[in-house]
Image (cartoon, rainbow, N blue to C red; front, side, top):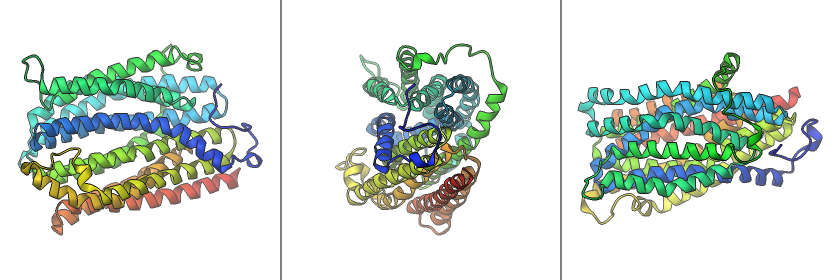
Length: 467
């Protein structure tokens, strides 16, 4: 079997992994995950850029629709994160049969979770109509986007199980290759569908939904092809006996995964809530918000990958009976994430106009207002970058310990009470407007990141004492 770290599986303390080896092992696992995530973000950038080519109104509506499209998917993906958390423990303990059970049940759970995800997507239109007096979004275009994207849900969730599978076995490069392969296809398909060809005028903003559906099925098909043909994945026939459910294992996965989904809800809800709050200040402010938020989402992918690597490496070390290595693996993931976010923050602070130019024509007078707002938001985004990296990497390390309930509570306090609550007070009560929303995000991320770090230090230390 392929393993993720050197040394004996049992007998812990005296066989601690050298720090430099731990750093390279974490980077080796996180780097291909990062590339794959950045490829996905590149697709998001393409959606924003092409929407921007249709004008600021289309950018506001297209950005809003594209962002909401992934909110319910991310919630289901959070529940499926239990596959990585539990599967890494099984792999570290050298229990291939247990790992196979977890992977199969992950596929079943993905199919079940797709139902509420699609219902949430369909419910966006009626909600926007109720709030029509408070925004200027193109509701029909967003509704069509959601309808076209419905068939993307199942393959998207199943691919997350495949992603966890290859990561657990230490072969995440496959996901990177698949992502790099489909990126040009997605860009080409989206362009043709959005702007038309051969005399057809195109779909406009709703093209985002159809292009997403097409690419999700292609991505899943490539993933299936890989894990059913390449070793060591062929030792795990995950697509066999899928009709044989395992109620006990499902309950165990939901105990671990549901709080992760809850944390995802609070985090994504914080950013989606910020988008909704920004829509109250007009299309130019919302367009600027979408630009800055998209860029921060790109930089976020690196520490997010570090967090995923931390989950697998911490879980593997604990399954192998090495709590010292588990603590070091989590600390390494957090340290690497913070180092990257410091670099990202410096770039945002020093070059906000250059970054904005990737999305909006700086020489077009019609974009002047949106560009001016973006210039006020980037310095704030630079400040909270550090804490964004801290919270996501600490969350990943804690999930390796299967600790998900307390982090969910921390996420609620930091993201919603302090993040959204503070942002609304600053923006609307204290009349700070758009920047107030972003200061709320910074407050929420700083609070949650600090609490999650303390939780990791406490829990990892406690595990050392108990063992």
